[in-house]
Image 1 (cartoon, rainbow, N blue to C red):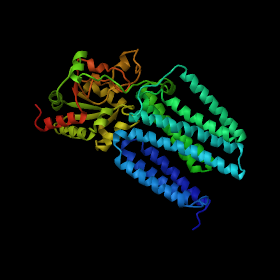
Image 2 (image 1 turned 135 degrees about the vertical axis):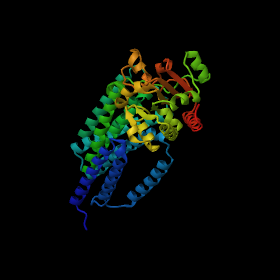
Image 3 (image 1 turned 180 degrees about the vertical axis):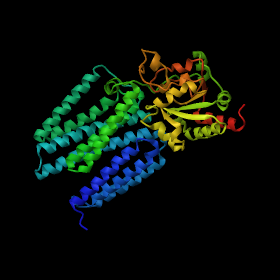
Image 4 (image 1 turned 135 degrees about the horizontal axis):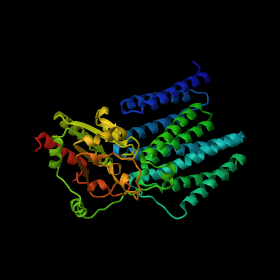
Length: 467
């Protein structure tokens, strides 16, 4: 049967519906897997409909590209650690941005040679290339910060905002000139300036703001895809790009609200450092600062006789890959009649939903994983809070110290519990570089060591009868 334009339009409509259902499914961990399946099916239909379209004249390079991408994607998916998922997301965003740039330039050259250029088309190309270029280099910088190739601390210098404004103004001016004249020189300069702007916009962002930046770059990649859809006259690409762009923008807003910061404050006033105190032992640093340390047995003594235990996971849990050990700890405590819940802050980890994904990987029941607004009223009734590698999201400085960079950020109120046990490798502060006031509360004890090893030790103690 001849695959007509109408058939393709119907296939694209079905794909768009599946993408929307996929996004809806991703709004809750219990339905996320189903949402992914919907989105994958929608993408399969979209690719098939595009390949069967009349505009495709040859399949050689397409098949080679799909095969090569499938091999690379499979290898990466099988080898990637969950701790590296944020930087993988950043890398994938960069691919979308670069694709938009290449499609825009390729389309311009093709239509120029055919004598079919017009102002509308060149305006669409300008938008796609500029957004794509900013997304590409911005995502590369985000990847470098997350991977530790670049410092997580904000990179700031005098006149930085003015420089960004001038680069942005020059980029827009060149984009307008290109749209009006079709000048190849304007296209090249516009692209180079947009690449530069992607770097200068993201380097001032500190590590503590990375969850917002990841979702913001996700939004950029969507708008780049939508602009490319206009360039290629592909309705589905426009729809998908708009869905990704809008959902990323909404997620960025939610992240900013969770941090009590505006998006402008994140972009132009990022804070955070990936460095902290080293040198002397963690125990010596703790004693010097007046912080109380505890042994594994002390924490087990309190937890096994507790009525309620709340576990707060953070990026340290991801680094130690301790989620499966936490699942075992949860089961051992529940077998003793202890109520166990997990508390998730919206910006815990290095990307939105990072902790939810890790806990789901360990098959921890969704009904025991509660968001900040749900769990905060329960902390006063908890006998023990076990903080596993989290820091900034439980720091009372956000509520008590008006001079703190994180002041005003809503936090998990772990300090209101009867006892708080912190699992930490050292006394270094969190990714924001801010000292944690919770360490100094009378009811707080630090248990030093690798999170997984410490939790495995707790599990062994519980199996052996604890105290």
